[in-house]
Image (tube, rainbow, N blue to C red; front, side):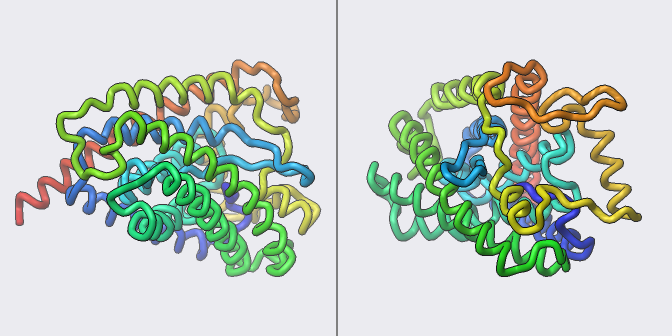
Length: 341
């Protein structure tokens, strides 16, 4: 669901940045209220796992399309909505700047579509109406599946609204909407199953992570190590087996306009941001850059790729470090602000 800059007007893209920046600032202040410092390493590792997991596109049967996890609901389950949103924002930032996945102008909208709805609307409803203080296996499964479906439906609808507000005539509202919602319904079901699986694993090892505000004296080392190993294996090896089909957004665009990608306007801000992304993305498309003059080619399913493995492992580590640093920085900043009051 990563939007490219070509799908947005500069005004809508700037509005997305403003809203996301406000949500990050708000979340950073809220971290001091009840976020346990022992969960900061978990923030980094979970973000790294989501980065790697998003590289695994899975085929949607009978459509010719594919999907991947968004991951924000999983992060909110295990970290709470504020740390969850900061973590998914870190993932999307690393993807945009270093791997050219999603536009830089579109980064704010991507944070809203793939993060804000799940963290700030879906998770609180699931938490307060279903999980409460006594999560059970069945509650976790139901909350994960329904929450993932609803979160992705909201995100897909927002993509359509944002292109409509941007005046993208190649994607008429009705047709685009009728393609985006069903394909992301299927993706939401898979995301829900994966979310439930990971949450149940963590709940089985450290149940207080889903209920208590403080981890206390309990060790979460086993959970952190397990997730780190899963991130490295997913990004380094499983990424070879990502579906070669276009993702749900690209598929919907192709069915609507005949193109999987639209060309960004050749002017001002778009050129500057495109140039910035070309210079900052050292593994664009999660692979080595093709030689100058060579045309990039689609990779076959299941092909061993050193470039993809490097992107998966290095991207996970960069995301881990960035998210961990954000957690430490925001916690210290919030503590200082509280001390001055």
